[in-house]
Length: 374
Image 1 (cartoon, rainbow, N blue to C red):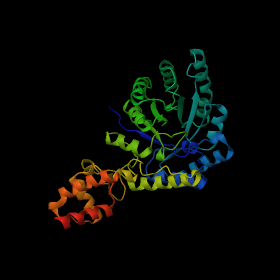
Image 2 (image 1 turned 30 degrees about the horizontal axis):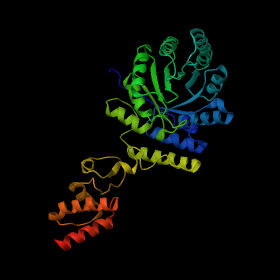
Image 3 (image 1 turned 90 degrees about the vertical axis):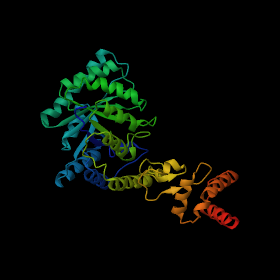
Image 4 (image 1 turned 90 degrees about the horizontal axis):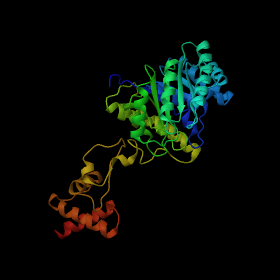
């Protein structure tokens, strides 16, 4: 792969406000933009200006906030591929303008040509007023669309100078191999236009699908903090980017600063809890959740997992001598070395008898009993 530099679009603000009724205040948006800048996100998709005058004003404020503070991050807004929406987007001052258009999955050639022809009107309206604008067009929905129709659309967009072609699995129905196959085919038709990958998480595949989309030739990753978004969300920003960086892709995003990412995620999770009554961040959250550093089988306890501050160990019939030693050390318990094998067998037997993992008190009692009977 010759070009392994990828662009990161953080959609926490725009897509995130479609997650379970979430709504960010202007102050919260400014704080989130601050986190994104500190983490070196390339583009903040800040909102949907055509939705309401106040939404347009919020995106405009974020753009001006970044400009006044000398941020490197680019602020983008999204709207429909209509002249009316184009006018509203331009008035916010942003230079990154993202349109979406919908072509019915079963649309025939004439219908497709009509939609694409109409698309040129808002594109020309933006180019006339903002010649330096960077235009993105999202094609909905690659999972339900005929591949030949997608190929025709990508070729058309490439010929007409669209900077970025976003290819969303909007319905979240695709598998990683399917994403790889279609993006591979489309990347060969995009010319020097970059393909952007936007995957929904209805089947739990968003991050995996996004990785495969980039491996297949995509050069823009669309993701969000904690993967928040419509329905079950989209790709998670940190884990998806980290996997890609570990595979040799270059990006500005600071995946090597997990502490700052944790602060960002904690902030977003606090807002989610305030508005929905539930947490998105929990024990099972990859990397950041406490479960990443809990161990029951000894073979797993030998590695380094997750970023939780404390490790934790659980003793049941599946544990081994090595894990028992780690448990004792973690909890400040002492057992003579010559009794470790016996203790391990006693732990296994007791967990079966009680049909549960043992508590610290249980283990202490076993140690006392073994020493007394030794």
